[in-house]
Amino acid sequence: MEVLNAIKTRWSNYKYKNKEIPKEVVEDILNCGRLAPSAKNRQPWYFVVTSGKTKTNIIKVMKDKAKNITNKSEMKRIGHSCSLLSTAKTIEKVPILVLVYRPDDIAWAKGDRLSIGACVENMCLRATELGIGSLWILDTIYVEKKIQEITHNENMELVCGLLLGYPDQKPRKKNRKKLRNIIKWQA
Ligand SMILES: Cc1cc2nc3c(=O)[nH]c(=O)nc-3n(C[C@H](O)[C@H](O)[C@H](O)COP(=O)(O)O)c2cc1C
Image (cartoon, rainbow, N blue to C red):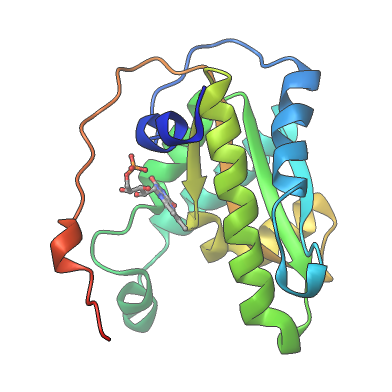
């Protein structure tokens, strides 16, 4: 598949078949993340591949948190259209949840997070090429401490998650701003 085609056909997948992904295929996708560029070549990513009981525990803490968001400032931070519960339900349907951690070094926060963005997009594009659906998720950050405990990564920052599974839905049309509205040419 050409890069352009992968870019155009990558989309967020919310429904997955009840079918395992072979370990070597998951590692192929993670390897494409590893090959991404990074600020000062720090390669700040560390992948925890969860499934089974560990994934179930993560879903539970996300659902518990969603039920207990009563505090007003927390509501404001998470937003009214809180997607924590719906994301937890999506994780239930997928065989693999990859957690992406980085060293908890404040001096490198911006560079590392940008680098992880490049890494995750590489993985999404490779997954697309292999016919595997993906969903990039941030909702795990609302229960970051609990997930750190579950995976024994208390000394690292949980940047985001990535769901991987065989898709069980058809691609949607992309909803994007027009190119002319997001470009300014300035000589
Ligand atoms: C950094 C990032 C975080 C995201 N977090 C979530 C999430 O927690 N839950 C979710 O359902 N979708 C999440 N998404 C998916 C976006 O909603 C989706 O990419 C966007 O609506 C565009 O749709 P498309 O990916 O199908 O093109 C996230 C996407 C990105 C890039």
